[in-house]
Length: 73
Image 1: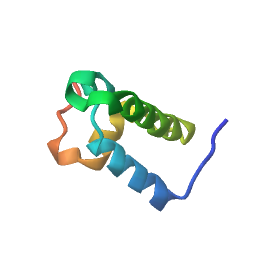
Image 2: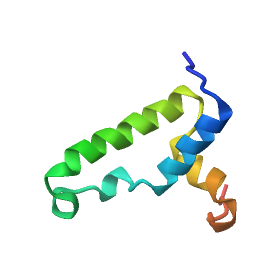
Image 3: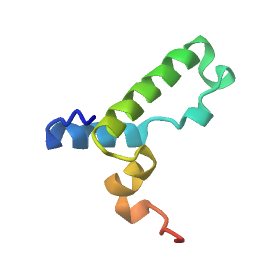
């Protein structure tokens, strides 16, 4: 089931997600006691993107096409 939001809001969400740390980078050593809260926030944004048919793994390429590596498919 899709929960589509306005395109402008979706673009803002994609931009914000592109600046978030990757979940694998969030550790207790790096982020202290806030690490779990940060992981929860990352997951919340990922879920919102998925609900709007956006692949979170492709967001960086959508937002910054000039600085993204070319696909090797």
